[in-house]
Length: 276
Picture 1 (cartoon, rainbow, N blue to C red):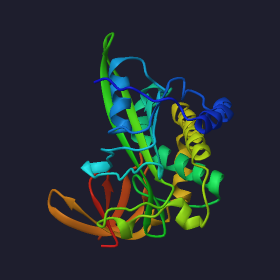
Picture 2: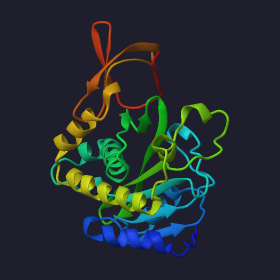
Picture 3: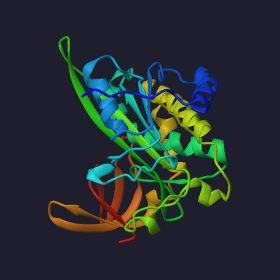
Picture 4: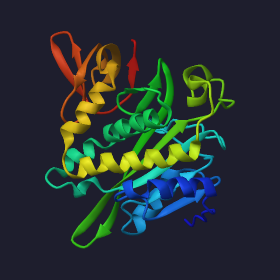
């Protein structure tokens, strides 16, 4: 599949240039699209065809944006931040498997930190991949694995996509009451090019933590930003049927711990219903 990127808008190019000293492994290749189906699809294409670690894909709009478990991510033009990164957490020095398991949590920490640095707004993280203000969703994260043939086996990449609502938009009726945006929460305009650049820069800093196996720094920051990870009622589908319990934190691989009766269940994936 061939993608034809557009010219990088001047304001975004200037914001990225100011952030350049902080971008680390990210941004050596950057593709911008006025509109694209999915930034994750473009990034996956890059990962599947070459040594693409650090590639960044940015779009002003997506026509087929998606979230976890096949959900649609509404991505209207000019209203959000839509970015995908090609990461290689398997390059972590001592514990590649643990680094891979913490990619989504790392991204949540970086995104909430970038938002606060640019706007002053302190959002919360909801396990495993959402940013919330109150009960409304502000941002979502989607990590997808890509493997390509390499000498002696396969090279594994993770395409990390995130969508962040910036400006008010005519959201579909089914999600309108469950989402929010930065400008609504702040009551003022937000500099979107600066926000794009800052999210990439902070992602680069936290990605460096991941590759250096500074896992405790990521986990501690995530726990500080996720009040719902302890004491919230949840339910989920298990092989034996619907279960419910109270959240009891996360373990060192990022799995959600839920106290159910006398047991502590460890949840690594699946659909969680909160407040159940």
